[in-house]
Length: 375
Image (cartoon, rainbow, N blue to C red; front, side, top):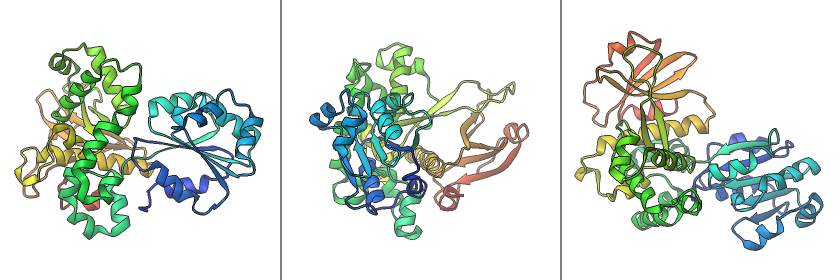
């Protein structure tokens, strides 16, 4: 098992009187992660799988007494795919309130679903964590920096979903299966998604616009929908951890754009599968965009995994001067240009550096990335 970064945060929270909730995309390794946590508690836990119809039935209108009869003398309750169980938040609340010596652990594949069910019932009663696909940092910790640097081009094409990493001879088949059968399963099951074909059109447009500023109006025209529908579908994809939005930095400077945003994919393998291009980098014309998506997504994974609250942006002004990625910490800004070619010369806009409190500027290329990603 590849040890996940959040392990050191979650493990000390066991038996602290609150439920542990782990949310993330399907196939990101949530069940495997909980199995890691439970290795030290053999025979002490009871597992429920929310995908099983009889499990869902058992939790319907459950009382604390009934729930206790289900778990008997076990000290840990693990509820996998918890978002599939109606009123799961209330059931967990009953366990936490009535049996404080029992540790409840629940995983869910969709933040918009599970988080909605647990938010109110579990206020003040839960520790909540996000688990993404594997990260560059986790892989370096697992088998060393030199080995992971050798895999860099491979990661830009196939990404970091656990099954893709561990079954390297089957990447194309598994990525296709992941994108078609798993990734959108929660979205397609939502009543709000009335037009699955439209969703597929929107996400394909987004895949080809990675690195560029996104316009809902432009996307709406391309896919034949209205702006509100496009925005709603993009919001749902973000909550399902398929994509993430990077807003424009605006501090009321006269020439800065106010409401721009870019959209990136959490995983390069999914991005390339949606684009229908899993070819080697040597035959690609979009390497710059793949590198930008990889760098920004890996950095944001790192910040989340290590509970760092820096804010992330890009920057552009009305003269179309731009900085790829910016982090804000304690009202200081770090500005980063992301370039695949290490020899490419870069100048940072004086319109930005001269009007903001800049802590550092740095070019992120394959040579500088390893040191920067975990700083």
